[in-house]
Image 1: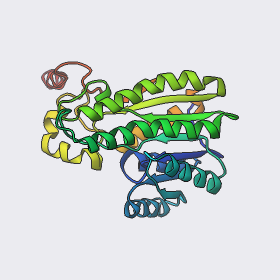
Image 2: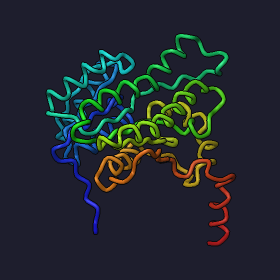
Image 3: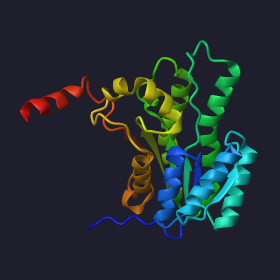
Image 4: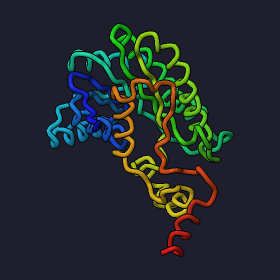
Length: 264
């Protein structure tokens, strides 16, 4: 049996949907039949994202929103439901990535990171639950490889993403009686605006820890999320999927590539 993922008559909401993984997710879900809504904090980036979607034949709902503020997020979700006719898939993708040691993290940066990366997931889950509790649905929550293997210099980010990974498990159990599936996703090194500076400055060293010896693209994550949101994944909940090309799965993955050359 061939797989044919479709989201006809479904509404997908993607926070942080104006660039990178979020925008790719909105593009793909729309191409697979969903009506999509995106939000972001920057009105210029939001307008550019909506224009990019329009150029692909996609009419999406978009609004600026502070995902860390309950009323702002509720307003966006309500407007999206009114514009598109419901809410079936909720993707909590918005996040920030400050780079400080924990000791050197300013208190305001700590608060913004916790509120944007962690509190927003809690707020979004509450909103999505209200929309899905009588019919079922899917929530997909952004964790990070930092939740598996934290890095010196971005400890607060790692802590928030570890919290999201934990929430995936708990929410999956709490919401299963309502037909709501909850899964997380862990991107590896994906070529986005957020990671670009690091991949340029330290790219070869970063690739050396990845089994596939290459960085991912936003659409690699989007396709994985499409599967998790689809009925093909109807028995998958409470899991967090790594989409990382085999990052840090073993020590010295580059040796396999060298061995391949000697066998040629």
